[in-house]
Length: 449
Image (cartoon, rainbow, N blue to C red; front, side):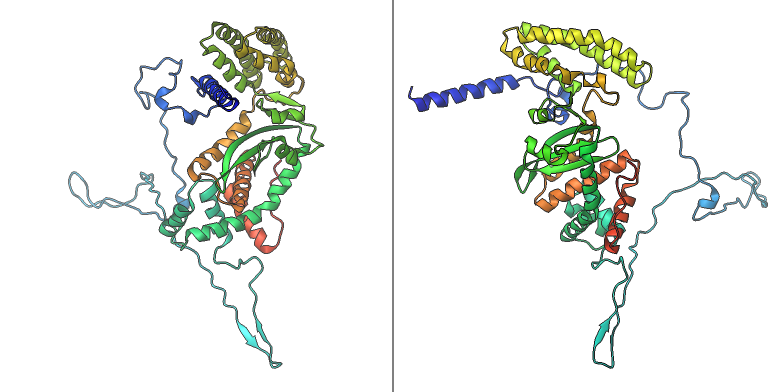
């Protein structure tokens, strides 16, 4: 074969090997998202199916919405019978304890419109002076609460701009078009941006961060949505790269904390990692699913102590096991897992050598949680934070501009941080927009941190 043909054939063979390696991958033995697997193809749960019928069981405690006090009702109608249901005689009087039945209904929704009449008056000197809008009144026709509600419809409830405009017009009687929603999202971004940048500035001084990233699109080009989860706040960022340079922009050189992450190599330069055991468990399951007996055996051997690790951690988390007791249980588990990784590294099996060698060489990143009390063994916090963003991306196909990416990262940051701090997201966004129009600093998202 000519060199060109040989290179092409080698490329095809490499492609075939890569495809064969992916055969049989699923969310249980890889990092594939659960949505990639058809519901009917998922393994059945191990829990035995109950023979009870669906719904409430006979004799269960009744659950119903409690009645609110009569004084809080907007309308109270007193209904009395006029005649006896048996003899038809006239009835009079009142029941001291009547049966109470309450019906909840939506009021007619009508926008509150305020008109500002700016008078222009002439002076004897020949000049004309026009009145100015009061401080805090926007130049446009949308008020702070309407703008906050519109932004949340798009970012929190994942509605498209066209559906958002239709919702406002149809249900709220608020004239709106898709172009107006774009204008509103840019104004809300400007109002929330100082709070966002204040959170981002706090990342380098955090003791622990759970970090993850997921692909997205910006202007039909590939981009990455990063998430940084601290104890009391979360920061999202859309960047064009997945490389460590994007990580360094937020953490900087002075970051001395610990990062919960998967085994992606852009995190390695941080040097203070806790590798996610949930990812490792899926990797060990992939070994179990292999057709190679040697690979399969090592997968089973690694899975047994891994299950013990999760069981001991669960007891420690729920308070039934002290930290000293947990560390005592982890000592033989650690020794067993490291011995098995060493066995795989010297097995001579190409399916095992690379992974086991990497894990053994960096085994200190498997056990960081033993030396630092508040470190989790997984990076599930960042994956949970990304879930809403991933669903939004699947519905919207990413953003169409840099300003759209800024809106996305800013709103996701506000939404997730308010959830962590148990704050009302709508109230926070509306207050931030109101402060922006008034020229005042917005309420800090660090207030609850």
